[in-house]
Image (cartoon, rainbow, N blue to C red; front, side, top):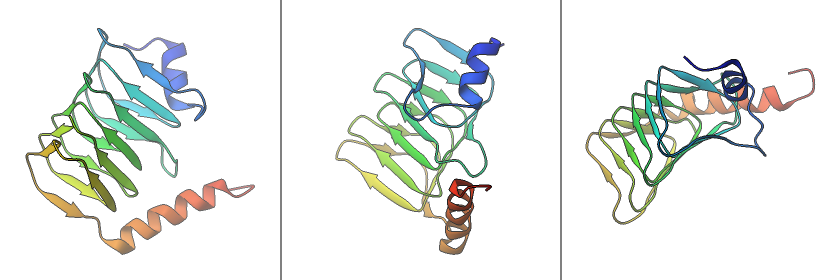
Length: 142
């Protein structure tokens, strides 16, 4: 069970101040967040960004996620055992491995990265609607 301070940081993250799950830390349970989340340890559960957010998830070189990911911006340099869905951008760095399907709008794969599953581009209309929702939430009163 996450303590209140950590849960609050994840749900109301500050893009200039990332939430870090440090090496040696294991979290059991789903995470919902906004802002930036860096996984250097292990998450056993799904990771989902708040609706309409511009959230960024980074899975560091020794980081591990055992669950599905649904976040607009994803950078993976560690391991993910689950499906990854991004309406914006997925980057698989040199040591990034996904054991699952990847749905993306834009994908960037560096030599050495791997996907053990299918790659599918999200329906451009679906991605456009999701991106419009993000942009509308940036407007005053939105």
